[in-house]
Image (cartoon, rainbow, N blue to C red; front, side):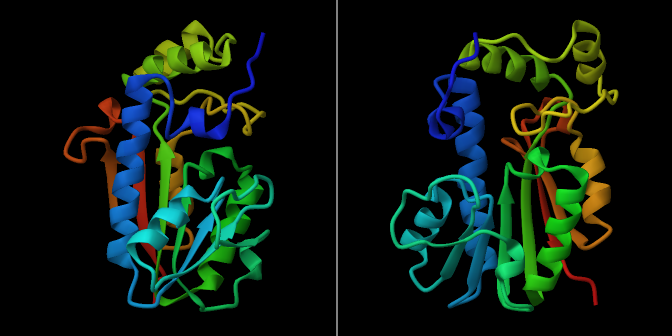
Length: 227
């Protein structure tokens, strides 16, 4: 029987210590990256902002920053955060930084293309795009799947054969239920999609940036508009 689990327990306060460490490491790194990339009085948009925790933390560290949550579904529970429903609501060339943290893996191909198009329009010429996504291949995959099965009290939608192939880095089919599953999502494929719209300035993995991707948990991309 599936168990309904809050967004907070799936991420920042996950009861699994390994998953919690991975999420918090990604979160901490994303905060520092965003702070470094934002100029004084910069404009930050968080695509798929969830409950607004990330923007709240940025506001605590950088009160000069203008911030907006792009969140059409979840309630933004943290105060003093402006909320909009679409990236296309941002005026052209207005944003200094757009972040999408653990969101792209849930988008359909059409939604991803729409997001990247909107981000390119919304960012100013010196703006940056920061994307983080889970790595669903390599040695970390079985650990993630066991954790999700325990947390949600349901069997994995990845077969044994698919699990073996994905652990070895071989592509497996993506699930049609992208809102509730990461099955088959490939950060290597995402890199190619980002490159259709942005030049990738930096790319690395977490929680250990110097480690190979196949023992890592998250992939990070920083893109800029090409001249």
